[in-house]
Amino acid sequence: MLAGLAVQSAGAGIGVFVGCLIGLSIRKRGGKSEGLIGGSVVLTSTVAGVLGLISMMVFTYLSGGMR
Image (cartoon, rainbow, N blue to C red; front, side, top):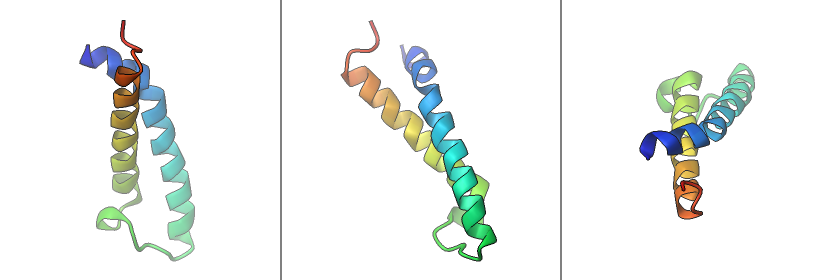
């Protein structure tokens, strides 16, 4: 069941990761690096992507998407 939820929600997690990666990369090039976890764009984007994946898994489970 958990694997099924992860597969159904993977698109949201990947989308959040790629969006954050692009946005934070542009922001860091502009000299604004505050707010990054460990000063790393990749690490911050990964954490955001995982949180997006988990959130989407919860929403899918609560909406009855796993039948």
